[in-house]
Image 1: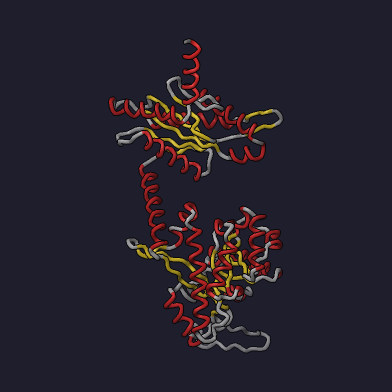
Image 2 (image 1 turned 90 degrees about the horizontal axis):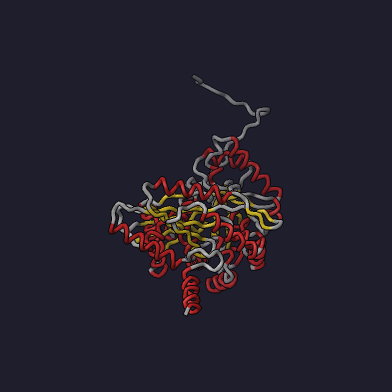
Length: 468
C-alpha cells in the first residue's frame, strides 16, 4: 500500500511540476491563480500580483551553446527566482523560456515592482557552466489585482501583454499593466479581424505616385502604394496597418494582391494610352514576402497572367530587410534579377548601411529616405548625407531617387547636387487609378520644370535698377 501511495504521489507531482526545474507547471500555477482570484472575491482586502517573465535572447544562447547549456541556464534561473520570493508565493515554469510568479498579499503595485527589480538584479549576475560564462536578463510584465472583475486567464493575458510592452521598450525591464494596454490590444485584434475581411471584401486600392526626371519632369514610372478603404474609418494609410499585417502573416496575401493589381494596371495603360509602352511600376516588398518560398513562383505567374515585361517591374526592399538575413536575401534577390526584374534599396541611409552589401547585392537603384530630403534645405548634415549618397550612386553606376520632395528649394538643391530622379508632393500626390490615368493623358500638357538660370560672371553683365 505504501509503495502504491508513493507511486501515486509521484505521478501527481510529475503531472503538476516541470520535469527540468521541478517548479510548478502551467496547470499547477493556474490552480494557485484561481485560488487567489476566488479569495479576492471573498475578501476584497486581499490583493495579489502576477509576474510574467520571458528570458531575453534565450534562443540565441540555446542555439549557439547547445541545449545542454540552455537547460542548465533554465535550472539556474529557476533557483535564483525562488530566492527572490516569500514562502507563500508561487514560482512556476510556464513553458520554454517563460516563468510566472504569483505574489500573494500585495498591498501596493510598488511591492510587485520591487520584487521585479530584485529579480532583475539577481538574474543580471553571470552564470558559469564549465568554460562558459553566460549572462541573462528577462522582460517582466506585472498585473496587480484591483476592483476590475477578471478571471484567472485574464490576469495571465494582461501580465503577458505588459511583458511584451517591456520587451518592445528595450528588454531587461518591467512594465505594469494598465487599461490603455488592454485597449490597444483590443484595437489591434479588431484591426487584424478587419484586415482579414478586407482581403475578401476587396477593400484595398492602389494609389500611384509618379517618379519623375528632375531635369525634364515627364514621368514614365509610378510607385504603387496601397490604401485601405475601411467601411467605418474611411481611407487608412499603410503606416496604420502594415505592421499588423506583417505580424499576423496577412502581408503575404496582401502583398500578392498588390503585385497582381499593379502589374495588371500598368499593362493596361501600356496598351491603351499612346506613348506609354515603356511605363513601369515600383512595388515594395516586405521582409516576410522576400523570405517567402513561393515568391518567385508568384512573380512568374503575375508576369505571365498580366503580360507585363519583367523589365517594367521594379521591386523595392528596405535596408533593414536586407541586413536582417543577408545571405538569404542575397540568394532571393539574385533570383529576382535572373527573372529580369529591377531592384531598388528603399529608405537608404536610415539603417546600418554597408558598402559591402551594395557591392554584393544586385541593386540598380538607391532611394534616399525622405527624412534627409525634407531637412536638407536647413540642415547641413542632411545635405551632406544626400550629397554622399548621390556620389556613391554615381561611383557604383546606380540610379538614385530622392523621396519626399515638397519644395522648390529642395528641388533646386537636388538638381545642383546632380540628382536626376525624384518623387514627392511637389510633383504629385499619390493618385488613384482614375486620376493616374488622367495624369498620363495630360502629361504632355504639363509645362516642363526649367532648371534655374546660371550666369557666367566673367562674360555676362547683370544690370540692377531701382534697387532699394
